[in-house]
Amino acid sequence: MSFPDVKYDGSMGRWEPNASGRLQQAAMQLYFEQGFERTTVAEIAEQAGLTERTFFRHFADKREVLFWGARALQDSLVDSVLHAAPLTSPLVAVAQALEGVSAMFEERREGVQQRQSIIAANPELQERELIKLAVLAAAIANALRQRGVKEPTASLAAEAGIAVFRIAFESWVSQSEERSLRQVISDSFTELEHVATDR
Amino acid sequence: MSFPDVKYDGSMGRWEPNASGRLQQAAMQLYFEQGFERTTVAEIAEQAGLTERTFFRHFADKREVLFWGARALQDSLVDSVLHAAPLTSPLVAVAQALEGVSAMFEERREGVQQRQSIIAANPELQERELIKLAVLAAAIANALRQRGVKEPTASLAAEAGIAVFRIAFESWVSQSEERSLRQVISDSFTELEHVATDR
DNA sequence: ACCGACCATGTCATTTCCTGACGTCAAGTA
DNA sequence: TACTTGACGTCAGGAAATGACATGGTCGGT
Image (cartoon, rainbow over all chains, first blue to last red; front, side, top):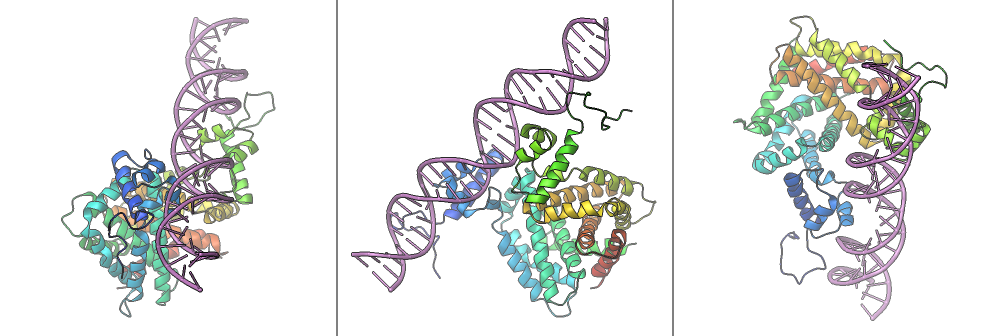
């Protein structure tokens, strides 16, 4: 294992290390301070000591810089669903997977709240977040299918699970919930059962 | 009541009538023929006999021209939820509302399929569709709250209902389903009940 | 019949996002 | 050493989106 993030002295490489990380950090800060629309990519690049062109080499567009963690989240969830105990029902597998990743958010609630406030202030970013969650749901549905779950059950369980997660996550982030995210998610799943049964 | 859409002869007004409709039609055609990315707003405007600037007076951006019907759909659904029979459970109210609007799609399946193929070919358009559905879900949740449904039940029922609709709609559009959209939706809701109960 | 406000559209200029083509230089590799 | 690779810079340009201002029919009031 190497540690490319560690700074030694100036006599190292041609470029300062961790360009992508610097861009993400600069973007977060500027989006938070002056809003997403009012900050230009040129500003972000300048603050990171890079050029606008380089920004677009690291991130497909101005929004993507805020969603770099999505892939890791997806991999973790898919892995969890794939390795759920045999005979676990689809929705329970999804619920357990989501509860499993909740710690990733609990740990740095600060940054999560800041990020969500940025997204909440801008429709373009909300769109991007929604499609990330949709891709997540599709990946989970695919994992369920690998477990032998048929359609439309797999898609239904995945989409319903993501919907529950979204509502639980929003509740946990916005109000200063005393419950842990894991608990909010768990409660929301039992509430979904009531909603779907009561008819 | 006047009928500004009716065409008389050329000696009428300064402008050809129904500029917005002409822009929508031109956009649909061009997006379908050459793809969303490869058609410019200037092209659309030219085909509609207008200027680029005028396009942006009618539609907030290049994507919005494809989603003009969303508002009517939302109003119809909210109205339906609001006037559901008393004591109807939240999810059933949502299901009935969605089944109620299914006729709007059944009637012109042609245009619906063409529109969906355009959207399916472009991530930006998928983002826009997702946020339209999210706004829809929020409006439905609000209507449920007006019926006395508490949170998080209202949001859960609305989001789950929209998720079911999305899956049912996709199935109905893509494969040449023999079932009616109304039937697919209905079946999907009972499938959701199984998914949520079986644990 | 005239006048003036109104409103949809046109025209022009500008900013910003995003991309392609090409150049540069340090580090690794044969 | 010579050659390749990778990360970044520089430059040019298309297209989206927006503001400011002009234009000329329409419509209501008198």
